[in-house]
Image 1 (cartoon, rainbow, N blue to C red):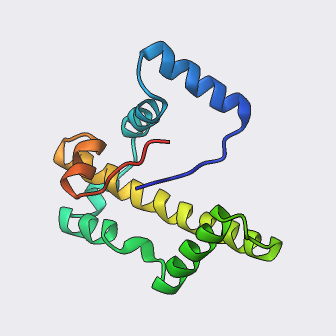
Image 2 (image 1 turned 120 degrees about the vertical axis):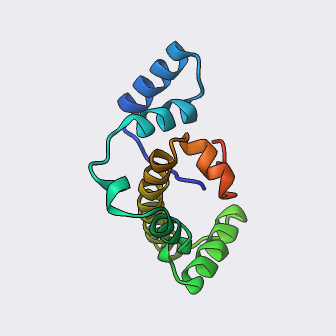
Length: 132
């Protein structure tokens, strides 16, 4: 799963500095911090089956939106994206990122329920993290 975030420059520098100080990658440092956060009641509200169902909903984004997203990404990579298409791509990207945040909450809850790391649960479910 890929999540792209726009962070304020000062926060990015702080996160990179802390990750370097701990001797881990930025991705790993952020994941560790997310895993350490308590999500009140998330694991107790849902059963493992319910969490799996929420995780596997393909983010709730219609197939047409995915198709359009990939089409626009292709146009962006080919440097053929119009201003209107650029705004549409930004909107679709924000929608996908928002859905990824929701999915990540359920993945973290499942990891806590199973007493595993987030990376282990993602690996078990065949969800691959893309390094930035």
